Length: 409
Picture 1: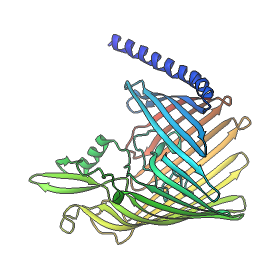
Picture 2: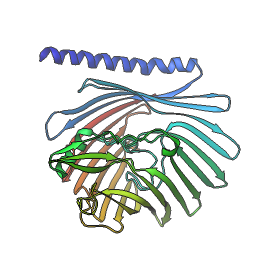
Picture 3: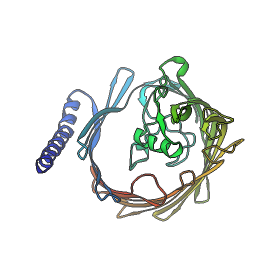
Picture 4: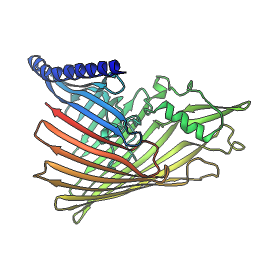
């Protein structure tokens, strides 16, 4: 055991040395080639409060590479990560795309993240990029989303913009297969998981399309969105084979129509967002009416939010109501579901120190969590983040505390 721990220490020291060396040498090499480079090195330690053991010890080198070739701007965001606790390395291209600029429109092609809507930390119309449920805790909101291959066009009409996004290849939500199996086992006795039909083939017929019209005014701004998308989370189809239940997760399409609005009422910023999903597929235990354990319904989401600044403090409340129309007995999702967040934040020491405390309530999962955060900007290049995710009631994941240091260049 001592020898294994010693090898891990040497591995950790070696990887950290390589990452730090790359962080200092790559900017010099890139500058010589006419490439603008930015990014940083991140070290994160996560401790599991329930087991009393380390949950993750992660080092990440994140690079932002930008250059132009004639009329094209090229952006690449490679990431090199090493989980010192699990001894696992990963190299990914988080984003990588080409921008072309014209008189009345812009074009972006490649792996990218598209942010729509007014919700902060909640998903209503922001459905282009699938969620990543393996990122825990999500220190930054953008950590929850995966980039997708897309062709995006922005067409400008004065202060208004028409944004068209075409995704030729469907990307599902990143899920923990073991957690998925546990959830299925809680709902069905003796299940067998079949993942053969979970993948969506790459073809023009399977591509996704979405459009947004946005307008920015002096008193308010709004967005109107529509799309034909895949549900990034699959629905479990059930087939009985003797005393076993074969569970086959499948993704389904739905139509999206919605929009968002923000304005000010005195010192309060008021935000609203809504979405109507037509043809969404849900699970049901009424096998007499639905032999495969699924039923197709329409669903509506409505979010209302307000942000109230008080000196150096900010109070923010968001309430999201979800309704399944024509709800039936036996459906695994309730007809009504509420999600709410309440945030209290304050800045200190000439805005270098920020404290946050957010409460998240989810009636569908029946949990209430507290998420305190402290951020300290030591300098323009170095900052520290401390926080926790703690379930006051319910909760499916472990309670954790974390510490993170970022070196930016």
